[in-house]
Each structure stands twice: as C-alpha cells, then as structure tokens.
Amino acid sequence: MSNATYTSFAIFGAGGQIGKFITEALVAKGANILILTRPSSKTSAAPGTQLERVDYTDVGAVAAAFKKHRVEVVVSAVGLEPQALDSQETIARAAAQAGVQLFVPSEYGNPTYGAKEGLWGKKSRVVELLKELKMPFLCLYAGVFTEYLPGLLCVDSGKCLIAGEGKTPFSTTSMSEIGGYLAFVLTTLPPSQLSDRFLRIEGDRGSLHDFAVRLFADKVPVVEHVAVLPAASAPHAEFLAFLHREFDSGSGDSRWDCVSGKRIEGAEGNHNALWEGHKWRDAREVLGL
Ligand SMILES: NC(=O)c1ccc[n+]([C@@H]2O[C@H](COP(=O)([O-])OP(=O)(O)OC[C@H]3O[C@@H](n4cnc5c(N)ncnc54)[C@H](OP(=O)(O)O)[C@@H]3O)[C@@H](O)[C@H]2O)c1
Image (cartoon, rainbow, N blue to C red; front, side, top):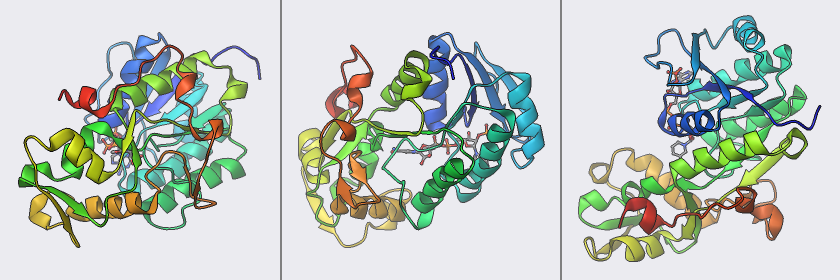
C-alpha cells in the first residue's frame, strides 16, 4: 500500500439523507466518484459523478463495476432498513473480490461495533464480515444528526417529551459536518491511518433535558417525562423511544464502546481534531436558533 491518498470512490446510498452530504463533500474535494444505485432506484448522477445501476445482490456485477472504475474506497450510506443493511454483505464480498482498499460501512450514528441484537447488531456484523474478508474498514460514529434534535424531543407536540430520565449526555453532529469530515479524512490522510479504524466525532453534546432547556425553552417550555412516547407525538415514536433509552444507558455518546460497555476516555475516544482547521458548530448554530 502506498502512502498516496485515495482519489477514487464508489458510493452506495448517495441519494439518501446522509449520502447526499457525503457525495457533495467528496465532489468538492475533486475525487473521482462512482455512484452505485439499484436498478429500481430514482437516484440520479450528481454533478461531477458517474452513475451505474447494479443489482446489489449480484457479487460479480458489483465487483465488475468496482474494477471497471478502478475503485479504491467503497463508501456505504445505505439506509437503516434491514434489507438495505443486509445488502452490505454482497457489497463487502464484491469489494474484497475486486481488490478495493478500504470499506466505509453505513454507520454515521451511535457506536454499534460489538452490539449483538437489532439493527445495531446487523451493523456490527458487517464489520465482523469485513474483518473475516481481511477488507480494511473505517467506521465513523457521530451520535445523532443535530438536525434531528427537534424531532427527537417531539417539539411539534407542543411539549418536549422524554421517555425515561433524559439526564445522560449524548453526542450530536450535523449532517454537513459528517460529510465534510469523512471527505476530508478520506482524501487527506494516508491509507495507513485509515485502515481498521473507528473514528468518533461530536459537534455538540448534552442530555435530552439539557437540549430541551438550551434550545427550545422559549417556544416549548414544558418538559414532560413519559413512560412511552405516544404514537401521535412524532413519526417513528417507537424508534425515538428506543433512542431515548439508549441515551440513558450512555451508548449515545460517540465515545461509547459497545464491547466493554464503557466510554473511551482520552484521545482514542474523539477524533474531531483530524479535521484540521475546522470549527465545529454547536446545536444552536446548526438549527439556526
Ligand atoms: N446519526 C443519526 O441521527 C442518523 C439518522 C439517520 C440515519 N443514520 C444512519 O445513516 C445511514 C444512512 O441512513 P439514511 O437515513 O441516510 O438512508 P436513507 O436516506 O433512508 O437511504 C439511503 C439509500 O439506501 C438505499 N436503499 C434503500 N432501501 C434499500 C434496500 N432495500 N436495499 C438496498 N439499498 C437500499 C437507497 O439508495 P439507492 O436508491 O440509490 O439504491 C437510499 O437512497 C444509516 O446507517 C443510518 O443508520 C444516522
């Protein structure tokens, strides 16, 4: 492996919520970008990118696309649906077959490596597979998208609703900074600093209670603790309640290590500084408050 930086990327899920930000940031770095999308998808080529439609379940077809475009790094930003996360298995096998040098699995949220169950368990198993395939990987943990904080607290219900204690701090990072950070490290750092790494970033931190008071106290002054988030209070109320419980356990902190069940203290627990010269935006700035 040479010490030159990566220049050629394939992105899955480029038209999705976080995928758009990652793609835009890599395009701005002048990288060669291949968007891979399902034949049935409405995703189209973003300016400065090439696009191929490919059956994600066909290892040979995906590997052929990687080889044709001399892809060095695969970035996955597929969605959280079980089928989308499962498609990463085929993509990982294709990447190994085609000699891709680095695989970035779809993470960009709470730390998941070491989780055994549910969607986080599925994400963790992708990393286990990459290890088995000896495919170098880079996982980026960033906590909750900062843009999600109003929805997370169900502010549209007229109150800030918290399922549980809501007193434990967790990490938040804006989508544009997740995209910008990933593009910066992938195009700036030498491959030796990117392989088999878990990078942990954080734009802001606070507990649900802190954020309710700090961000919304003027417009939504009532903070109510509930056992269950009512379905009418927010779309995906059940998933939000799951996240609130995660925060209470401490695992919404991007420093969290699911293997040991503890925070990683010191420099190995936070990698914001790798984005040299960047001024991280707190939640007020991101939300324009
Ligand atoms: N930190 C947070 O607060 C937070 C919030 C949301 C998401 N995330 C994480 O960010 C990652 C991406 O999530 P997202 O919400 O950005 O994704 P998304 O917008 O829901 O979907 C991204 C892409 O996934 C592909 N996809 C959808 N269904 C699929 C299927 N059945 N099989 C294969 N591919 C499928 C589609 O790409 P094509 O149509 O081009 O094939 C789609 O554009 C996930 O790991 C998620 O957990 C984090």
